[in-house]
Length: 80
Image 1 (tube, rainbow, N blue to C red):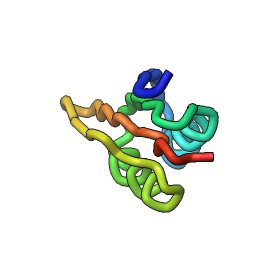
Image 2: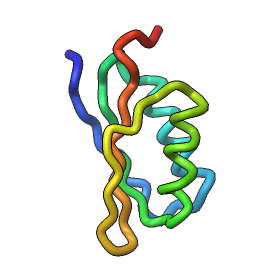
Image 3: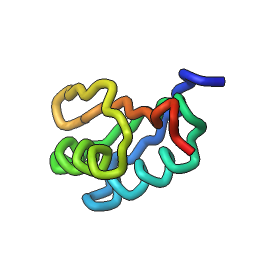
């Protein structure tokens, strides 16, 4: 079903691991599916959106609460 959201908690991991795990999750996601990434590595808020731009994924939202970043990422509807 499109527009679902799965959460992956990557707190405690340092880059490039959050970007790699996010890429893996998006690669397994169905077209239109969203993945919520939660991380506490300050570089992940830069690296994960950069990976999304390179790979053709969408950053739906990015928010920070102290040291924790929450990113909603989406696999495009037209993904293979």
